[in-house]
Amino acid sequence: MAHTPLMTSLGADSSLARKVAMVVFGSVLVGMSAQVSVPMFPVPMTLQTLAIMLIGLTYGSRLAGATLVAYLAQGAVGFPVFAGGAAGLVPLMGPTGGFLFGFVAMAFAMGWLVERGFDRGFGLFAAALIATALLFVPGIAWLTAVTPLNLQGAFMAGAAPFLLGELVKVAVAALIVSGAFKALKDRVK
Image: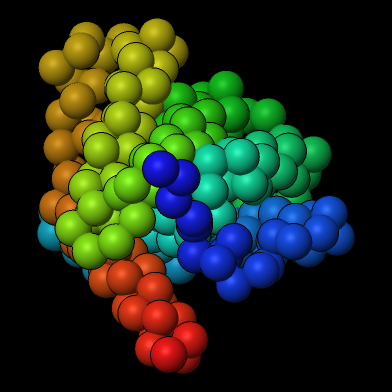
């Protein structure tokens, strides 16, 4: 049984022009959210992965993946869209490169899970949690490749400080999208 992402339910991706607009809007949203720092324990967090979760949970796999490819392309050509206003190829090749490339897989995986039934209530939470956990795989692997850190050191530097914040963002994203689906259902009645 095919499941419909929220933006498809709203008809937002019904034409090529709308799909392009969604990709542009989403990539700009991710770039803007990367500049917002929220105090968290043990380290401050950006809202970047929250924006990616919202895109992944609402756009579907292909549009979500395309949106994050567009985001990386914007940063690669010099737009200051990466965290802290960074741009160019250095962030893509440096210690955070695995996470940046992992954003594409994270968004695609969330959309894919939504399209396969993880599209309401706890399923949204599970889709966001699974895809976010998968984000740490390329991030940590990349850290071990480009730094002198071993696997444990890369986990402690690149994942452990962010786990609590990511769990909070997973819950927030699932609640937002679940609420939006409920509002849509109530509007249709």
